[in-house]
Amino acid sequence: MPTNLQTGGVKKAYWKLITALLLVYIVWGTTYFAIGIAVKSMPPMWMNGARFFLAGLLMLGWALVRGEKLPTALQWRNAALVGGLMVFVSMNLVVFAQKNGIGSGLMATVITTMPMWLALWSRWGGEKVPVTSWIGLALGVAGAALLSLEGDFSASWLGALAAFAAPLCWSIGSYASRRLDLPGTAMASAAQWLTGGVMGLAVAWQLEPHDALAHASASAWWAWVYLLVFGTLIALNAYLWLLQNTSAAVAGSYSFVNPAVALLVGAGIGHEVLTGWVFAALPLIGAALAMILYGASIQAALAPVWGMLTKRFENKQA
Image 1 (cartoon, rainbow, N blue to C red):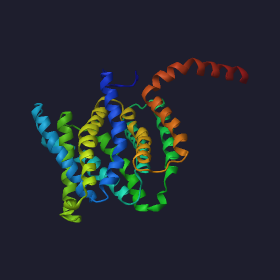
Image 2 (image 1 turned 60 degrees about the vertical axis):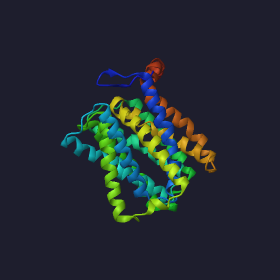
Image 3 (image 1 turned 90 degrees about the vertical axis):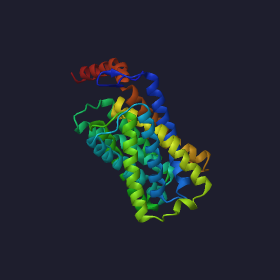
Image 4 (image 1 turned 60 degrees about the horizontal axis):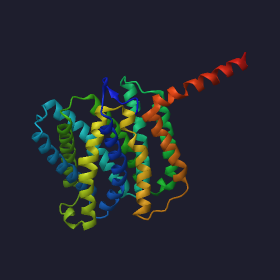
């Protein structure tokens, strides 16, 4: 069992953690392919704005049924800040990047930089980030670098800029959600999605055709429904739960698995061609997850070996 799965000294149920991790690992790995299908005939702002606004309404109803109270004025403001960064800015940057030539697998690869940013904000904010987590993050980024050889950012500098800005904004929003006063989990999700969705719809109303969604293809609508139900209502809720109940490194570890899932889905369904770089990167990604999730156990197991090697080195120096 992972050893760094405590927040505030309260140990969370193991099965909840595993379920939440599997959801964000697998489901989010497939959403990039779904986004690629949707943006072929849907304008990005309308697509994202409608998706999160409807998800916010559904989650608001669910939260009220559960007996959660409506957010205070301060909590609405905090939710708008988090929702603005994660839902409005970051998600629209992802869609913009894919709309401008960045492939689904490559986009998922760039997202692997997110936990490094999140760990950095956490460290600056006074939280302790274990050495093993930093090692895992470095291994994950190395794996991502190999995966990035599957594509070519030079095809679109605007798409590349949006791709790298997306995880930066997401990490800031993720860190803010850990530090700011927010309502209960369901109500916090509802408030963040509603405010971020409203921002997206307001911009879409100004920049994109008002009847654009009416002309979207059936496949685009099916992809949109998948993004709404699985990508938002299920997987994003799991991620928000992880942010509140695990370390920043564990919560962000999904970004190391998503590229592999996205590339496999692209190859299996989208008939994208994979090179040998994928198979070189996967062991690094696996090692990164092991260091992040089981770092303390690995460190404890290797402690005797490290001590023996250190002692031998000291003896030779003497």
